[in-house]
Image 1 (tube, rainbow, N blue to C red):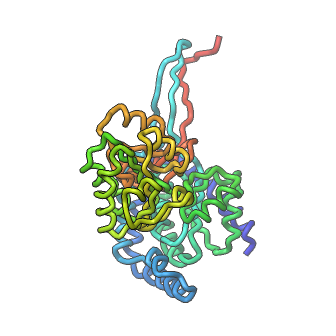
Image 2: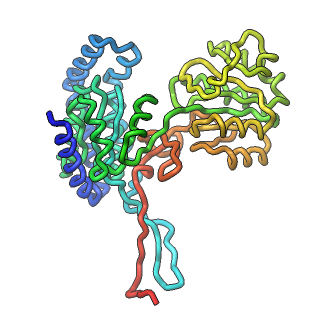
Image 3: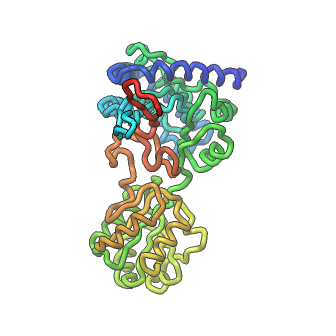
Amino acid sequence: MNVAAYMTQLGQQARAAAREVARSTTEVRNHALSATADALDRARAELAQANQKDLENGRANGLDAAMLDRLELTPARIDTMIEGLKQVAALPDPVGEITDMNYRPSGIQVGKMRVPLGVIGIIYESRPNVTIEAASLCLKSGNATILRGGSEAIHSNQAVAACIAQGLAAAGLPESAVQVVETTDRDAVGELITMPQYVDVIVPRGGKGLIERISRDAKVPVIKHLDGVCHVYIDSHADPEKALKVAVNAKTHRYGTCNTMETLLVDQEIAEDILPLLAAEFEAKGVELRGCEKTLNILSGIVAASEDDWHEEYLAPILAVRVVEGLSGAIDHINHYSSQHTESIVTENYTRARRFLTEVDSSSVMVNASTRFADGFEYGLGAEIGISTDKIHARGPVGLHGLTSQKYVVFGDGHIRA
């Protein structure tokens, strides 16, 4: 296969399809999603057969248990895919929404209309259910998409793609509105991220290495986050009961997610009182603590933290702990070491909470809440394509609105500029 020619063809088809999807009605796009859900339900045997090929190849190629688990399409996961399509279909359609209308002194009306981005390229690893998640969000928001899944899931992704094609056809939309790359050649990724004439934005979903490579080499704008180095700061004005609940949940609810707390900061005024309580909770959960010098003076038997620990996204039952000099010390630490994902303060002091919200420069900043809430579903977005720590266009969980942009619209009645 000539990969460059193949990817160019996908790009050309996606660009043409994007225009048709953008002018389609909400009802048509919802019909495509519902018909895809029905196609998935009918194709359970085919999906299982294709997935079994990927699992067998994965075992033969030495994939670890965690990767094989992410790769597996169980009946329950197919159910979740079907339910996800129905949920996205039920979400409000942002496309065409006009806001901020106002009259200007000249007599014209000026506002903003929400419009699709165009063609979205999505690069992801392992989980074939991402194919459905990504396709449904892109389609609902009026975009065409090119999906490049991991080579380990090639058979599963193609089986899912066949169901999506049936759904698009049932709604009268071009099948090229959602295209799953058929080659496992890695050059396909290089082509996809360097086709600005066909692709408007790239969304990478995967490990840090993948995202770093795409961010470095792409000629197309990228919506991404590299790390989830998230912090919880327990202020001297915190309610101890709330502090324990928030900190323990932020770390132990799930270890392998990007919104899990990786560093705990504690005000030096309350450190001697609250750190032993926290340590007992974390010890019961099997969490290893790595502390600064002041923390080591309070807690015995824990590991000394190195400079690298303050930068680390563990994705494991390990937690860095630092005692800081009040709110200013916490804000300074966060703005220096944070990956600008999610930070939380536990305090009963409104003034301190407002200062934390104002001065901490991250995509999600919370008061008296676990960082685990940094999620599209929890934010009421219905679903998300990923998290963005960028500052332009989309920031934080990226849902349907994040897959659209705005353009100015002007209404006049024969008005001319004097």
